[in-house]
Image 1: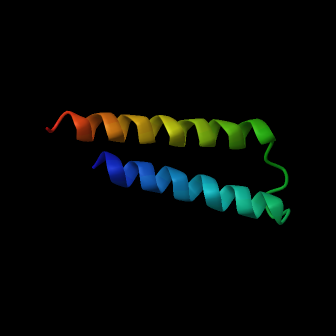
Image 2: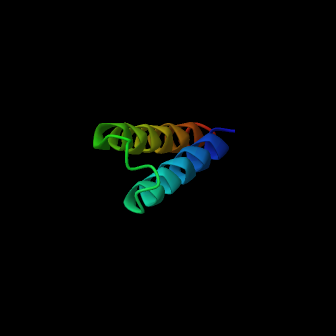
Image 3: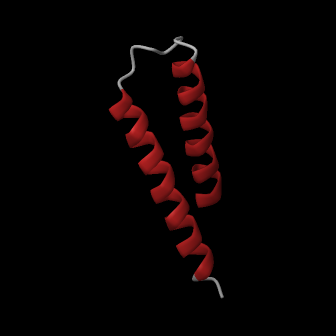
Length: 55
């Protein structure tokens, strides 16, 4: 479950980053993009932690 959330967040952040680079979403501030990156990293850490508890 958490792995799907992680992949969704990474995918969404990547799409926003690409569209911002093409100036389609150029109005989005860079801080919002950084928040997306940090949330994706946090979700990745939580996913790894959840998977390590199953051993």
